[in-house]
Amino acid sequence: MPRTGVIYVMAEASKQGFHYGHPDWCNLGQGAPETGELPGSAPRLTTIGLDTESAEYAPVPGLADLREAVAELYNHRYRRGMASRYTAENVAIASGGRAGLTRLATALGRVNLGHVLPDYTAYEELLEVFRAFVPIPIVAHEREGFRLSPEALREAIVGSGLGAILLSNPCNPTGRLIAGEDLRRWVTTAGKLGCALIIDEFYAHYVYGPPSLRHAGELPHSISAAAWVEDVDRDPVVIVDGLTKNWRYPGLRLSWTVGPKSVIERVSSAGSFLDGGAPHCIQRAALPLLEPSLADQEAAAIQRAFTIKRDLMLERLGGMGIRVAGAEDGGPEGAFYCFADLRQLPESLSNGMLFFRAALEQQVICVPGVFFDVDPGKRRDHIASRMAGFVRLSFGPDRPQVERALDRLAALVASAS
Image (cartoon, rainbow, N blue to C red; front, side, top):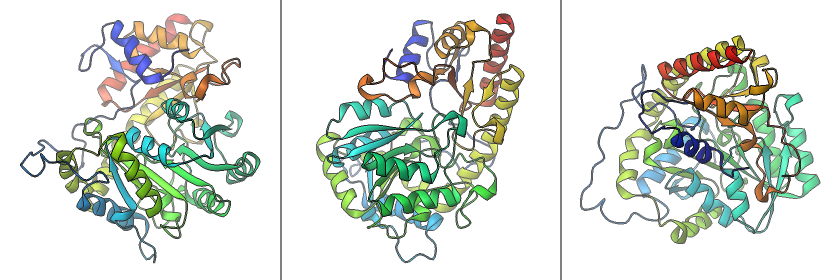
């Protein structure tokens, strides 16, 4: 089985003639949001300035004013009225989410590290490369809607002696969301058991669930474990986010890590030899994007536009006889993916790899579900993947591209019936 899902599917599409900007192709594979103006969105960056100062190295932990801006955004959104608040010392800047997670991995030390199945395909490479910790899978069962309850979390921590857990929230690929009381219990349970939570919140603006899911103190259009942290320097909660998804700037490759000062010190130290820090000019360009009112404006615009695309994809896939994970509860609660169950389709399309190959012939890219069955070191390679009958379809592209892709997939399914 090829190793890294998105890289693999994009390479295979390129062999068939795909290139970025090709008018005939529909890219529902790569996890990238549309980057242009949305109705009501914050103004988009059009230039990045370069002067004598920004031509110099930036500090490895990040520019002080950018770190402070990140801290203040979290305080504004999630920590109003709380005594313990984030400062610049609780924030480290890096060149994208992978760089931020790589820094964290080097700072973890020797621990049993839990990771949820299914989850973000790139975690497999991260968990395989760093051998100081032992990756231990935590299964989110399909029969439970791919949800992992606080009780299941406790059992995993105690039963496997976990020192840390890595997960995406909202989840990539299922769109499941840990929110409200469940998220509070995750934070408190992990804290009481001395287990660090490393939460990838790159899709925190993409929240579609009902208001009852959200903590009353949070904004309607974003969610974060930061709302449930009691002491920002004591509680073992580390958050990774950035401009890629929530601000729709995947090309800028800028991320931040938010957590206890002691963790941020280790993360910054790791960055000094791993990557040397994020580009100075990109950090300066990012500063105005983090102004709370503009960030909230962008989040609201994202939710409005992407809810329409999500509902469109759910309706069209349902018409093809394709069930989507979470559809019984109204569809994906977050992120911008439908994790599509193919097992009721004709045999020629009922497997994720077969469906992927057939979709490529229609110039539509998707990602087979097996790539989200994260298996570092291929220790479970002898066992058939539970995800073999799924594909991930993104509604990240603009609506016309999503509609073209769905038209082609509908024709593909009809021709196989």
